[in-house]
Every structure is written in structure tokens, then in C-alpha cells.
Length: 301
Image 1 (tube, rainbow, N blue to C red):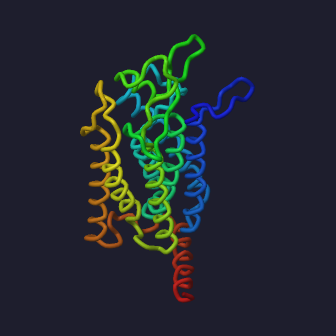
Image 2 (cartoon, helix red, strand yellow):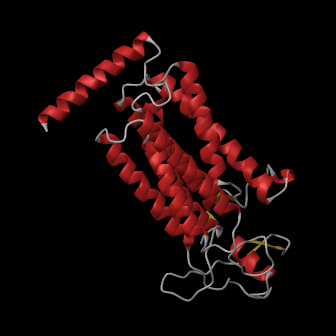
Image 3 (cartoon, one colour):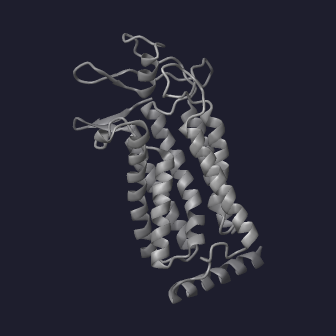
């Protein structure tokens, strides 16, 4: 509920972008640690993640501009403007291409990506809450919150997104200072993502679901996001309606993609896409060291 967290030397620090940066940093550090546990070469992983972050930001921004705004707004970062599906798709695609080019074991990279992606997505939802976007339905509950009106220096109402939406559909007046109480779906989404990240991390550390962990996470998130999407207004209409929208479509696609690859992994076994074999001598030795350590841990248990 604080679009601007603090002002440093007259320059505002926007909550959305603060938590966006924190999410990216957390995802990168977690992914590095997990990749190192699978004995993947550090510098190859580092460059892969750097490119993945750039790809995620560009894809998320372009997705928002394509679906919800205008490409003339590309440089305007004051009001947020990211699509989580775009970030996941762009970042993961770049990481997969780099892994294949540089000879990293793709199943290990994807397994490490599952906790990292959803930990970052969960943190980013706090930024959505600060920004006043991705809100839920109007309702008086003990969880309900109100988002403030924000004025530009010349007195024009520029935020928050929740207040602007309620103003546009006639639920509040220009003289009001707060939106109507709404259910903070952003915090429910945050909880879902962090739970998926935590479960994925536990499975990764126990070497469970190797080679398909990320697809199980995708399928789980797709189903849960589909349910949560019904509690978010369809912003394309001039009244508060709850109908099928592009969020439902993307959730269904994510769930189906996850289930498809889980099925492929189950039917084809370990070498589900031909990427399990190490592609360099160095990686091959690292893989054998990892397997020896894993077997020792299993015997000790």
C-alpha cells in the first residue's frame, strides 16, 4: 500500500521496483547455490543467470506493453508494468538456450530453476501489493485493504491502479482519498508461490523428481493461479466483472505444459529429452563426483 517506500535525495524509491530487484537477486543467489550443489561450473552458471535476468525483464516488460499498455510507455517505470508469465517464459528460455550452448546438463538447470523462479515470484508479489495492482474483489473482510489516491505534481490522479479502476467504474469519486476495501489477492499469490518454492527446494535437496521438478511446479502453479484468477476483476470491462481473461488462458497453458512434460518424463524415463548425458569431460567428472556424494549421503541415512 506504499507505492513509494522512501525518497532519497528527492528521488522516490518505488516499492514495486524495489521488490522486483530483491526478487531477481534472491532468485539468482538461490539458483547459483542449487546449481553448485549439482556440481555445475560456476562461471557458466553465472553468465547463464545474468542473461536470464535480462531476458526475464525484457520479456516481462514487452508482455505488459503488448497486452495491457502501449509501446510508447516502455521507458515509464513509475507504475510497474510487468507480466509474470512473460518473465518466467523469457528468463527460462534464455537459460535453456545458454545451457545447451555451453554444455550444462539441462535437467539439473531446470531443477534448480524451480525453487528460484517461484521464490522470486513470491517476493515480487509484495511489490504488487505496494503498488496497488493485481488486487482482488471489493469486500469487507478482516483481510481487506484500501489503496490510496496518488496525485502528480500538477494535480492529476495517476494512481494507485486499484483507486484508478474504482474511479473509472464509478465506485469512488475524484474527491475520495482511498479505494473501496478489496481482498489482497497479491498476498494469496505470494503465499502460493513461496509454498511451491519451499516444497520444490525440499524435493531438490532430497534428489526427488529429478529432471521434472520444474514441470511439477509449473503444473501446480498453473492450477492454483487459475483458481486465484477468478478472484481478480476483469480489468478490460467498465464494471467489476469476473469472467475468463488472459490470466486464465496463461494459467491453463502453464498447467498443460507442466503436465505434458511430467508425462513425457514418466513415459521415457531418465533420458526424457536426450539431455541427461554430460556434454564435456569436465561436466562428466563433476557429474560423477555429485553421484558419489549423493550415494554416500543415502547410505548414511
